[in-house]
Length: 110
Image 1 (cartoon, rainbow, N blue to C red):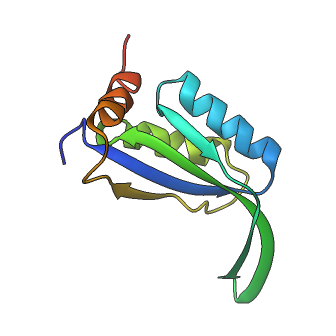
Image 2: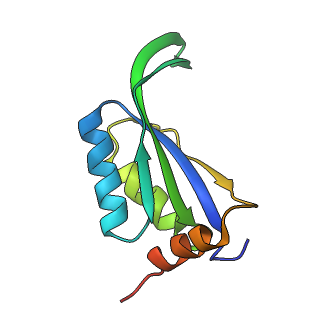
């Protein structure tokens, strides 16, 4: 996958404060062009042999393939979960101007 290929990355935070902290860090470091912090959702999942039920805050993160590694590392470093959900989906279609904006905003400048 080419480094400027746009991605949608999804993760969940345990509360709004952690969600804002992750979102702001990613955008300030140009690891993401934009992060949408969604309303709380209910997650039901297996963890260490037990069914868990918790409220979480979904994050939709727009980035590029070239920034994914650093973005993933930042989420892991900022996230309180032992194994945070981090899923990346390639964006095959979208408004060209918007996708170009994502690329421009995540271009690493030293």
